[in-house]
Length: 239
Image 1 (cartoon, rainbow, N blue to C red):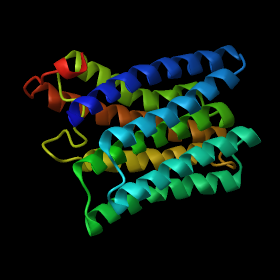
Image 2: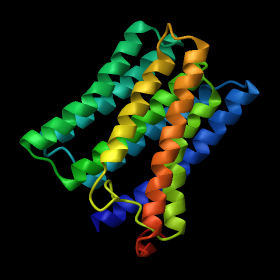
Image 3: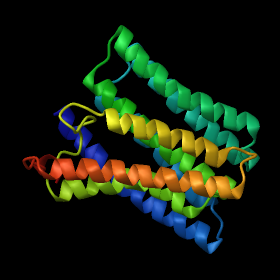
Image 4: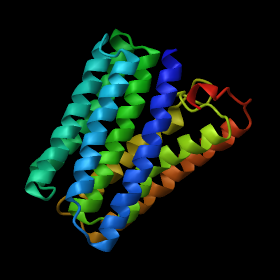
């Protein structure tokens, strides 16, 4: 039952975020006021995480609590950026701290014990962090609307896997392994920090952003090819 609820949550929020990202990309490209869409994105992020926390019954382990701290830090960074209207050095340092906490919750899970639900919570918090940083880079740094492709990759991947009846809820889709995905995610986070660094040049931002997009596209494409060879799953739980 819990997996079915998570699958429904995953599919629903993937469709919602694809819509929001498309609206945001159009708004940035058209030069219209972004206030409404940014408020919508903020509300969706909070509600999405709260529902996930409830669905997974998270909070029983230290790793879960560190993951919660990561999300609260991300929310604070996004809120502070919205108030100041830019990514200044203190905000960027806070972004770096939020990024480093990803390693802390992984260490806590290994040292003090984790759970399958905690791994799912960690993966989805990673995704929300990529989403938040990409929006900050696009809206407040001017790094390029194409950076919104970074979070869109995950949501598009989920929808496609569901359509073709492939597993959509496994945090380790490669036979219980996710070493490649973890390395690529860490690389993408570092590249996003480069994109949002206040003193970075436009050329450096373009290069860092392009490398991040290529890495993430490769990660999801390789996982999709692997899953294409696996048996179909029953997707009736999310239809």
